[in-house]
Length: 349
Image (tube, rainbow, N blue to C red; front, top):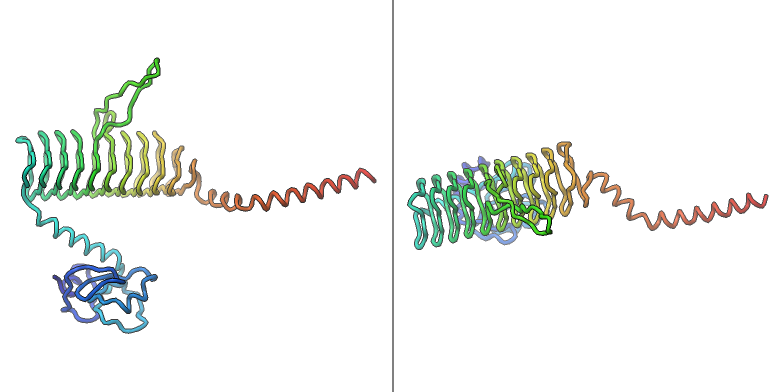
């Protein structure tokens, strides 16, 4: 339960209306009820701004109202970002309350636990694991030997972190994700069979990374697979052995990154994109959804699309031309017919 005044201080907002109005939960602008907080950021929802029953609305400071509103307004430069801040604070409050070790669970005697740690039931934590302060580990997680998990990290239900991997501060790993499984390394033999190449490296996840549900990040053959600070990975992503994902890079669901590929910082990889192994993608690279990248992207901030992927603008021009091919074919046939008629006239003269 918070007043408009308390929330305004938290997000540095200007209040229009009753500063003492109290809200207890969040609601979508089209469904919110009295006692709830909502936000308005997308012009498509403007009609709901005047009909919502919400008691408190986050709104951009430059929005001009077309008619009076009953709710109290909190004016901010970016309502969507301010709403995200509030949701994060709410979530932090929920998880901060979780402290202690639930049973049944197994924690090896050699494990080092920080302060305010929560370990849910049916969790298994192996030998020589180090867990920092305020770490929350939910039900059914497995933490392998010699793993390090730093402060304020959340490990959701069913996550598996294999031996020797390192997880930084303020990381969130969602349910079902596997960190440090073997990379796909097999050496072809003369008889047509394959011999497994041992994968003896690890995975390093730096600070402020978020990893979606059921994503897999393979350990390196030797050295480390590295997810750098601020990277955000969606659900159902495959990151192969020895891959490096740069700072603040975002990757959407069902993308696959093959072994030893290095992706720079602030890159954006669309859903279902595939990137072959041993490539380099420059800082700021943008790969459109369902694209197949088979060559390195060496120019920073370049956008590519298609399979095989190539320059985004050139691809759009090619698509525009391809739609005109039937018309162009018809015109070419007409020109050929006219040419034949001209040649026939010349031969008669």
